[in-house]
Length: 490
Ligand SMILES: Cc1cc2nc3c(=O)[nH]c(=O)nc-3n(C[C@H](O)[C@H](O)[C@H](O)COP(=O)(O)OP(=O)(O)OC[C@H]3O[C@@H](n4cnc5c(N)ncnc54)[C@H](O)[C@@H]3O)c2cc1C
Image (tube, rainbow, N blue to C red; front, side, top):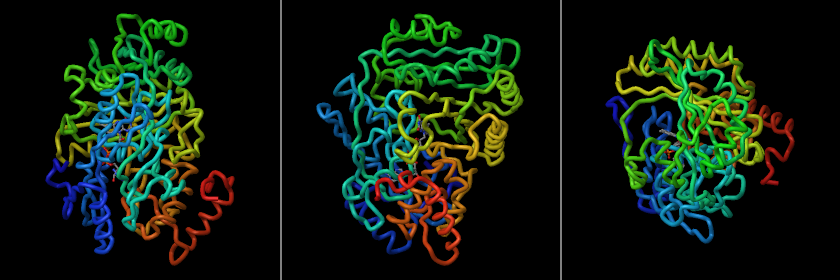
């Protein structure tokens, strides 16, 4: 995880073997004023689980990977240090008709992934990973081990999408397994501008969020070398919960322009579809148990939500900007369709507020191999340029972002005294009107701000420099319907 010599190093790394050792570390760290970082899978986009500009220690949950699947109960207890790949594997080991709605990269840890929301290929049918959590075990700021009942519904709400790192150390999740058919169908269809990619992407924007929940078609847009010149390529990548025979008429009805044929489609088990989408089919299912990184790369991500389809002429301008980038590879856009189950869940149900009204989510993503400062700067700047260019086409007031694609460009807590008002700049982007409730929960469970990081939720205290903060918070709170803020605490 420290592939660059310039990466700040921790004073020490603790690898607890059980809950009691986490409790001891939290109590001791608090006593000695040590800043703690908690690491599960280590996939944080800004490295906040293992780096800090201030002296710090790491609690690395690598030894807590136990997964107990109870097929009859359709649940599993999963320790926070496990990866989503391990979860998929252990479920599929018992039945090919169960799965869990998590993400594509199998080495992502469930500690960070679920506590940030968790989007993936089953999202349109079952919602986020966090929508499918039934219970959790957490060590709080006083070193107490809590479950859902003892932590209360406010804290249980906050850790399912509000980011665990602000509230405690999540030890394990009780997840609800979901049904998957014995056969799913996967297709990967690539189209360039010369093959009508602009019209197809335009149509995709209007249909992908409306098709039946069983069908997810995401798009990956990137500049590539064409036959004679550089061009834009759009990859239409899909997992359908059903057979080819069921899929083809559905596509013919909703998206005939793509011209999908049986030869483009492959039937397989749900667990094989995970490998296929990640490009790991050849390695076999056991690769899901391998938690080491496939490659050592640097990357920058940013995110957006799109509420209205972008016109063809505007898409063409966006492609032009993408093609003008000289770095190789240039930033890409990964677009995940919403709709389906996501439209049915209230934006206040969990801290993740991006529900009905969103057509799709965009992730801007650049990656590079050279660790040099100037190279990193070029790629990061290039990603920012594309993000800036997209401003007119994406959600506004606030321009929303997704916590799991963490982006410190949105704003940071300079130190532990960052106020609610200051943190609103980035907090509203991730959480919209759920931000106040997160601040309220934080103030209740960690008023001293022990669980701090550059984008942790700040507590609210009504003294000193925060008096203004306090009144501003109260004003925001009374303006809103009471149930959206304190529904579970009344
Ligand atoms: C290659 C790649 C693919 C991805 N694909 C997807 C995707 O398909 N869908 C999606 O939604 N996201 C995706 N992500 C984003 C990913 O979900 C987030 O980066 C997530 O936070 C990673 O969790 P982690 O446990 O691996 O990371 P970590 O770096 O260990 O943790 C991330 C954050 O959570 C905190 N944290 C971790 N564990 C705990 C714990 N037990 N208790 C309290 N706080 C904790 C950390 O302190 C840190 O702030 C992807 C990321 C990468 C790098």
